[in-house]
Structure formats: structure tokens, C-alpha cells
Amino acid sequence: MKLRKTGLVLSSLYILICVVFIAWSMFITDPKSKFVLLQIPVVLQHGILLYFGLTKLLSGLSWALIYVFLALPFTIMLYFIGHGLESLFSRVSCKFSNNASKNVSA
Image 1 (cartoon, rainbow, N blue to C red):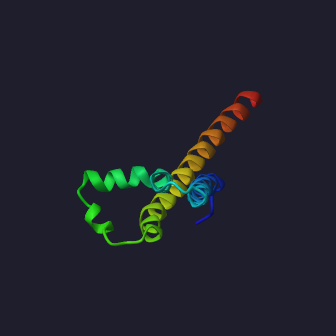
Image 2: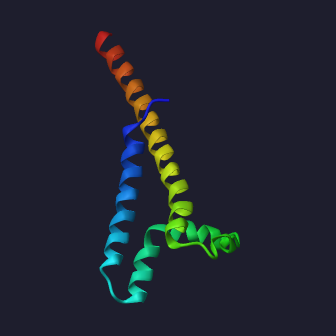
């Protein structure tokens, strides 16, 4: 399987956002603000677990391990979304370029 740039960009952007929020929270002394900043990158994934009643799986885990369990699948999903988008756009551009070359030769 060929690595797709769009998938890598989406995944890298999400990882960068996670790192920025984690680093930002390390410089804050207010515990509530630190808690909120640590939650922001994984709030959607946590909401999905909450909807299905699976938050018990996270009890007793450190925040670093919770990040791994929540962010890693989302990162992989973002890669495949980017992979699919790039494949779709390459097919569409091929189709348009084939149609354009047919119109020019006619």
C-alpha cells in the first residue's frame, strides 16, 4: 500500500494539535484549566465512549495511556480518511483529464 500525503498530513496535524495542548497544559498551574486542556484533543472520542457506556474501560488508567487508547485509533482513522480523499480526487482528476484530451483531439 502506497502512503498517501493527505492521510499523513491529517494524521500529523492531529498529533501536532495533541502535542500543543499537552505542552500548553504543562505550563498552567490551575488544575481545572489543565484538565480542560488535556481533554480538548480527545473529547470527541470520549463522547463516543460515553454514548455507548464504555467509559468504565478508562477508569484507573493514567492520562497518557488514555491518550494512547483514544488518540491512536483516531489518528489511524484520519489517515484512512485522507487516503480515501486523495484516491477519490486522483480518480476524478484522471477522468477530467481524459475527457479534456478527448475534446482537444476531436
